[in-house]
Amino acid sequence: MISKDQEQEPTISYGYLNLVKSYRNLMAQLAYLTRIYFASVYSGFGNAEAVSKKLYSLPVRFQEKAELIFGSPLSEEFLNLLSLHVLYVQSLANAMVSGDQNAANYYTQLLYQNADNIASQFAKMNPFWDVMQWKTLLYNYINLIIQDAVALGAREFETELDIFERMLLAALAMGDYHADGLYQYMTAGITRPEMT
Image (cartoon, rainbow, N blue to C red; front, side):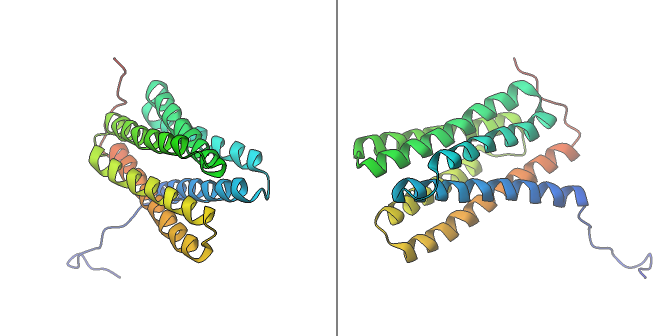
């Protein structure tokens, strides 16, 4: 029993824990499905088209969550940017498998440009999300996607497993930051941003 004189440690709400769990789960799915897509395209094993459909379903799930908090216009732009991320990742995989270095470089550049756009969109949606922090998180994740793909293509499977572990941790860090920002936004009493 805690007396009035004792200090209580802050408690974490179930809502916050569920929010973190939900975004960590979505980000982990993004990492795993990205890896499975690359592995399927490189090896011809499995069904790359089925993995592609599953990957494309993730931006919609993110958008549905964002729409509840930020409304339709902002969440639709968010959906567009995340869908482009999936498109560029898949295009990069196809370019790497076909040995088209120019196309691979092009889609790598588009991934980083899109990361800039995602970071800017996040900052526009929520004052508790920092553009530079999102860029750092996204750039790190994209870098690990590329490293993982190169290791898979070179059949360096032990190295690839180590890289994928870091890629998964990077995805989870993005999920944590996403959830933390949403929680701060929801508990600050801020009204939905309006599109101008």
